Amino acid sequence: MLLSRKTSAFGRSGAAMVEAALVLPVLVLLIFGFMEMARMGMAFQLITNAAIQSCRIAVIDGYTQADVTTRAQSILASGGIAPNSYTLATTPANVTTTHHGDAVTVSISVPYSNIAWLTPMFLSSTTLKASATHTSERP
Image 1 (cartoon, one colour):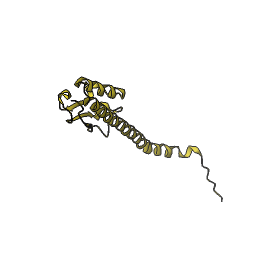
Image 2 (image 1 turned 180 degrees about the vertical axis):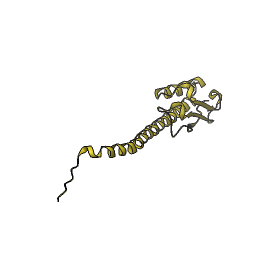
Image 3 (image 1 turned 90 degrees about the horizontal axis):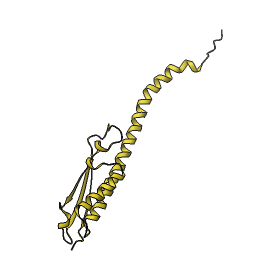
Image 4 (image 1 turned 90 degrees about the vertical axis):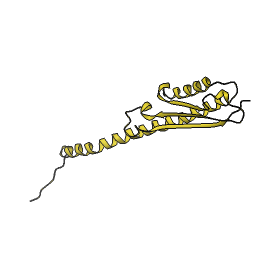
């Protein structure tokens, strides 16, 4: 007696659903992880650029502390980082009191949970920090 096996696409539908149920959550988690890491990288570059550009303004004669803050705000706002979500600090606290050759540092820190696009699953306790130091060109 010869037995023939008939296979159909409907015979594996249960197995395909089980495989999808196992693979799909891992794939979605991986995609969200990539998105979160990309946002963190973009925000870190933006924060670093804001610190450097603000520090360049801080060391030039004729610019005030308000100019330093405004430069940082405009750069960070271009990347969607609101003024109330980060901390900007300069050393010394008032850059107009520096003299030629003094070191001026601008530091910016942002809790990642304040700027995440998605609900931060992996990086919720991370704080992004950047600083730049230049020597003053003021007389």
